[in-house]
Length: 305
Image (cartoon, rainbow, N blue to C red; front, side):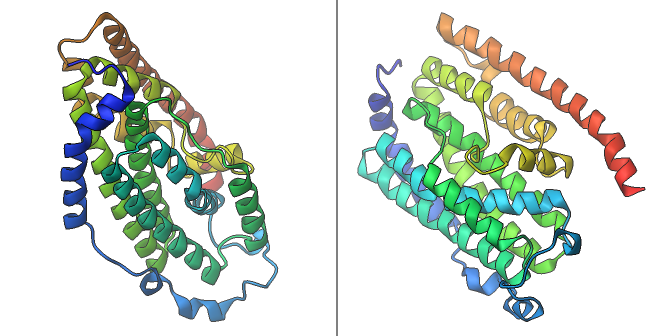
């Protein structure tokens, strides 16, 4: 089947959205942010105290990850606006509201954890939040299937980033916070991943072209965050998220294996070219990522010596 418009695809996918939404509600677990926050730690330091980097207990890359993860959640109104505008059908919007409520819970628990542990400069964090939310910069895919492909990749990338941040916190409470958030992000990823799988069955050529666009132009949501490039560099250096992880844990397992881009049949000429570009781009990302990681390795070794 070749669907002529993005709206056609949204309409035809509606029964699958209903099924996946029901699966999500049956799988997700209710949890309370305040149960995970180590409130007793608030007595150890006051959020009103001046923050000095020389006294920081967390490595710079971990602090950057916490800041980027939180500011991304703070920009939630604009992600919701984009999704709600793209998908007018009520069941899609019901999902968008549920997704928004769950993502907002992530922002609550990460912010409370950061506040009681005074993990970063809270004044800088608030100034960055104001800048981020006032700027309203979020990815704006052109079509519904582009949106689904982007969010599937982004949710998995976010899950990996949250989990790796928690692993590096060396703090049981922080680990539990990030693990809980990562578990939610995994369910969001599965929802969008499987919608893209359904879209591939309905319109393989159009969906492959959309996947190619999103794989080639992918950026983590956060480009409007002050000093985002510096944060991204620190996050990569810490091993929380870099091109190697993007290649090995996102592009290869999802695009090549789960979506099976290399084995899809019946593609038109445009989609065949898109498939070639996807495979070539993923291979390049792997090569570039490993080259960059090799350059960072001596720096990491010297820093730990």
